[in-house]
Length: 325
Image 1: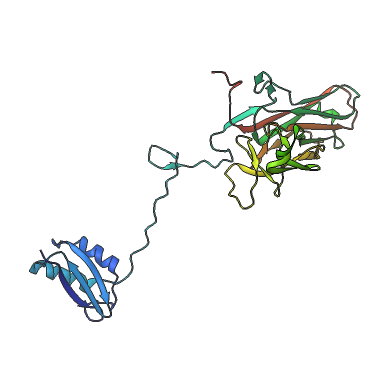
Image 2: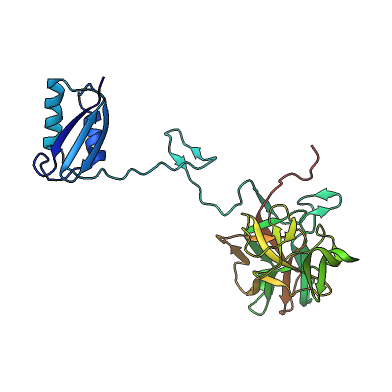
């Protein structure tokens, strides 16, 4: 076998005076020509079509016909199929797509209670409920804690005894931060320094050691630490580093408690429906070191006992009461 070249004039043999090698290759390969195509090369007006061996008379006639009808137009771009890891498909083979803000691998959790931390009992802690006796007014709060980081999504606030509420009564939902005070002096060998009220990372040459397992993360886009939203592991931030999927920058503070971060602020309770539904698209990350608080400012003096309670929809990494097998 000897490679054989067949030369055609682009300006005279091709009908549109142009040639597209990718299209011509496909046309030849899909034809009845028995001899394998080697490659196509163009130079100036010449289009050289190389085959692994000489063509038979019939195959040469077929090749002449392909050239005579070749449009010279580029082949349309072919999109590569996109495969999503872990995707689900229906019985027809169509991919099932469900838009959700839930972090991958988390569980949906509806509750009206926080967690008990010791011994661990998820969903059996403080009840999201505030009560007022007849004629009682003032501000009351209730605070929930969780045994792990959670993501708050939707919820509902309802109040009973609606005839004893009006537009002067308000409720709020907030996050309460803590301090990072578990510090031990370790001059010249610690993992941090203090620039009050901030705790600054040190590379083993600081004056203090901070217990990062008990430290309370405070969100800050300029923070010098990073917390993993999934594991709550805290590490120093290095300028320019690539952040992980669940990482966010934070600060650590000692001797100072930041003000509450409000998710709902002074919402009127004058609605005759006695209910407020929260339907949000995004989620709010809540650290296990924070408290989720409900606050009611009761101004109107109630004739009878009244109460306010809440239902929370959240996402969390564990959905069992405890971690026992």
